[in-house]
Length: 497
Image (cartoon, rainbow, N blue to C red; front, side, top):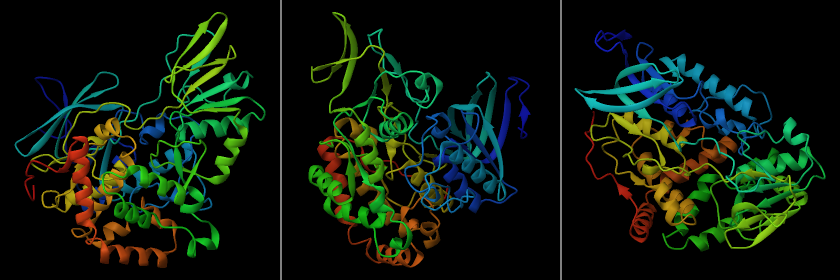
């Protein structure tokens, strides 16, 4: 069937391409960047996303969100920002979305890209050497895409947070994704605010409220507590970049050396003490978030009350309004108080399992049920390189069901992901040109001057094989201990497909 034709029998539009990428967030844009380095301008990529533009979760998330790493380290491949701000600047939502547009335009200079925004992939199957996909648009149109290769870059599948469902009629329950904390509705009120959650969203929300409304009562219900990597220790500024701070690759290497699959409590203590900052006295969670000491101090000074527990409901009883916690305790709050749901986005919804590559090698799936790195952005970058180098069938990468592990041990999850990343990166380093590693702009080591990075990269390339067996044993221990999928693919991928 010809490209762009409509079937007489079905009146369904059919598009043909060399590669289809589903998902235009940071994962899909990295996959597109890599693909554009292997493909010619005569070849075509179809880029599909259910949203009306590129940007993934950044399209939907709260308006006052900012990057938690310096902006230049959030990109596709080695594409530089055009923002013209200080290198330590934390970009805003609008600035991040503008960079997504820029990355897309850079890719279009190398390969033909046809974006289909407002479309969703409904199903796909492989037949006669092609991947055939059925897609629907937001207004109900149908389309079939036939591609030689498919990259499903759904990432973490993040969707906006809904307000908490509560029983009380005397409080205002909202979500940052649908209610700007700096907007007119919040500004016209002076009643207390109760932030529910202890992660990055909660910290962003607390900081926004405390700095926007000095003196207003802001409270935090922080769950089991969270600690963050200290931005000051990871990203020293000015001349200190030459001699201070520890490169992230060094932290991951040390983490992999220390973690054995059973000692996550000890690892958390080491990581928190050496590189962390935190607000709550207990810190049961760590999900790779980054916070500066000054942000932490501002939030700590501005909070009225911090409760380490989990909100179950808010109820009206005998004239009072009470927050009800998982522990069974309650807290009387002022009628008219705001309850802001900041309980987080990552691994919140169940996704079906798919191997990171299909039997034929034609379909790559980038999502946390078959994680090969700690972040899906890295997965999009490295798996696409391996796809075009015909190496996906040769390298025994480990895949980890991160969603299942989170349910069984949230405490062990970040350290298992760290070991997974270092194990797989060791295998990848032996299979790709060094330029693949050097061009990964997501690598936080890029914060440091080139001489320090060269030393770090050289050290990794010379020593990475030494720790591979320990990392493998650690991951095998996680599989046995928690009865989760964690190991090489069980099927054999067709090499060179």
